[in-house]
Length: 175
Image 1 (cartoon, rainbow, N blue to C red):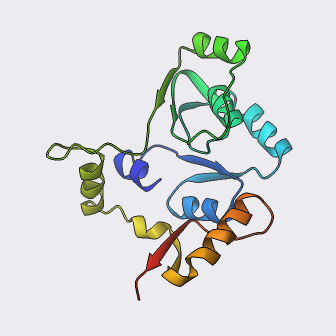
Image 2: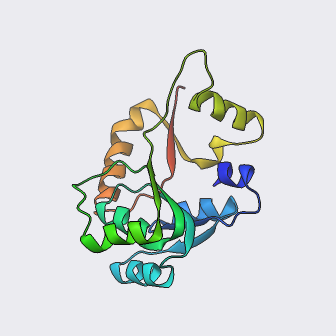
Image 3: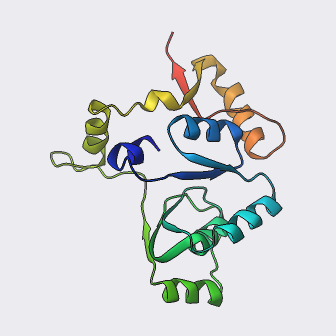
């Protein structure tokens, strides 16, 4: 959100998530947010925003969200897939037809590119940071190294929806 708002201040950024804490961070950074915590809420969001967004960034890794990103993309729009996909992705005939009818551009990206002595993703981020981008605003927890196994366990159990551990980014500090 910070990088998009810095590069394109007039653009409305909408962040959709089931994690209230992440949405709070996104809202504080200037995004409009939508909480979709249930399957019904997600279906309603998709229906209400069908063919709505000119640029869609999917970063969950959920196969169904890859398909949903096509549903909410407007004609002539761009869909960027960056979530590390969890399962196989099978696109139905209707979804593929939608891509064709809407003349969508679907792009993929993988983490970052390093080019040693040339401009690359890393140098771009350093430039953003010198222009005011603050990745530290995303840090929700600072822990000592010996707390890492416990924290990873909490994160895993939260991801499995067995317990609640609200976090955005965790930094391990060397005391």
